[in-house]
Image 1 (tube, rainbow, N blue to C red):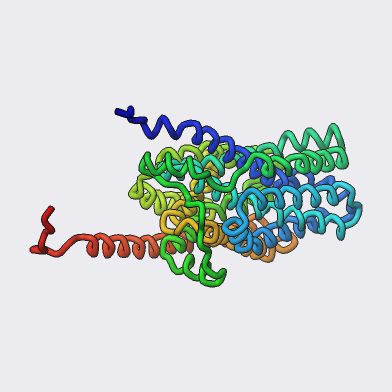
Image 2 (cartoon, rainbow, N blue to C red; image 1 turned 135 degrees about the horizontal axis):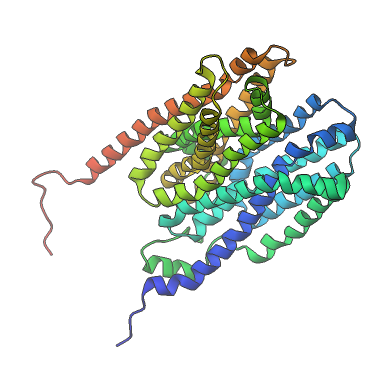
Length: 447
């Protein structure tokens, strides 16, 4: 008699390969985050190089975010139709080209062209890393993989601070950005040679024997318009959209754009002290991302609870900051609120998990793209409105504090949307469970 084989043991070699393939994508996302946040420490150098006021450099950040947002739907569709292997390579090539132009630029025009290419390439990374995770890993690991992907991005953000500043001081503008472009260009060949979009037939058979089948080899794609409409029609996608809005927007707007002006303008801080306080939020983001994945796992109930708790945490943190009497917040309270902002950002991956679990495999990229639009669309709008409200910065501490209100508005709107669509998801689940139960007295078929 033929000996039986433990399915989990049989699947281990392919699972090890899956980790390597996902790791390639995670490195690409780390590099993308480094490119995205590079201007955070290079602003003064850029102003001197392009001979413009520092305030004028806000257009670089705005351009990148707008293009990143505009590319989310195309990026999701590319992930579904052309696969992560080619799309990740295209994204890395665009970022390398953009950073090359930025490194040699001496004018705003060429510099903006470079940052535009960086923004487009950046948009092609995150969704494709999630696509690889969906294709190669069993469902019980999806929450963890989404969180670890966010962790890779968080490390990229950390590299864009002190290490990048040290590089600028040592290698100068050209050495730093041309070196970054060169490293990224070399990485283009890595997904082309090491990444496979989905498992082969043997891996699928092993996964099926283990009771958890990955994405099938042949996927039938619906027309693009129908794919997007169906994805948005699902309440789980909409809940993910609002969860992402509530949790990511405060961190993105505060950490990447207006955090330092807020802290120096309302809390009587130096720029160095403000940067150190914002670093606490970034570290909280790094720590929270994997913990959220471990906490949720494949437990749908925990995911539903987290989809309400973490948006509430983000909203509560900014309620305290913006409603504190007199506007000057005690340092301990301020530090705690910024840490909770980072915790919320680390939990933003919950939105992608909500959408993934409700989406068919062929449309998971489109669903993830719609979720990603939640945080980034709100971030762009909030950043622009805050800039309008602050004006020339001469309005004083009270004006600056009130100008940050769009952050709280985004968090509260996201929380409300998560509650509303969470109830819709629960109602659909109850209806499905009711339909699955046979009516009382129904005849039972004989063996």
